[in-house]
Length: 404
Image 1 (cartoon, rainbow, N blue to C red):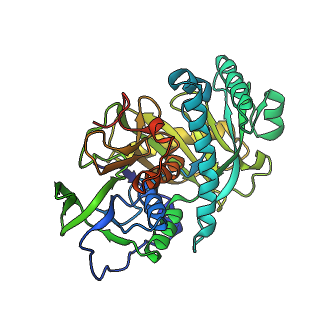
Image 2: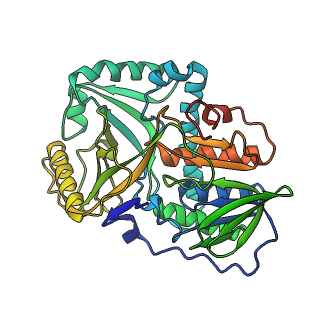
């Protein structure tokens, strides 16, 4: 599966991560993680810190899958608004899920601060504006719901919008305590830390089959066999080696990254910007002063091979961004397309397979993938160390839309 194509930006901001050569593979590990992106690296960190022996396998250079195309937006709000999620799964679980997302951003900040490299983690507010006049009621409903349950937020009318941004809309929901980061630098830093804690990292190794015998799994790969008590699949949007996703769609989206802009003094705290329309446009800034603009989602799983298609979509995104920011001289420096996953119920897939004991998943489907990776790593840590985690059922795999 071609999960991204075009000129990626994040790899230009850092050097490739190369794991140290493993001198001696263990006879068996407590856990082997398949996939070394955001979910795999954070899960490896949680488990090694808990004292488990861990190996991480990846068929590519580590961090060069979907992590390299990750937008790096960290938000406690989700693609499904809280009041909608309450209608779907009930008040208790919906509010708890939003709280998990809110707490995960703080956890991500703690991890970022513990790394030996700089991951460009920066706290930002988010502004979700009404794409259409009819969406104002939806925005106000969500604002009231978030306030009711204690989540930090505000509402901007047209006057507040024009005072705080270069453009104005009919209204917007403002959420606080969100953040941004450089996802590739972050994952590289986490992998370096995991390696220093004793985990074994293997790149260019592809899993070909899994067998179970005598309470151990044999993982056959393109290179050698590994043995483990437990397996965690953190394979992102690619087909999982074992099990079938039910109620998940793989689509593709487009992004361009601009030239450096001189200043953003008229942009309220360089807030993360998105909208109510689906699919939505999103905009953020970088430490270099660039804009990252994404959207134009398409119901196709693979990134297009055609550079012409990617550039045509980038030009369309450029026109949209110039309408929002007419005073900036915006040009396209990088343009790419990438696959992304969405679940029908707007929740990630986290937990043990319903019928295959010892095989776990952390698939962070949705627009809030990095946040899901963080909260999911803690759920899996508890499950694998025998601690009860009352949140596991919210995102468990045996729900209607899970993994079978």
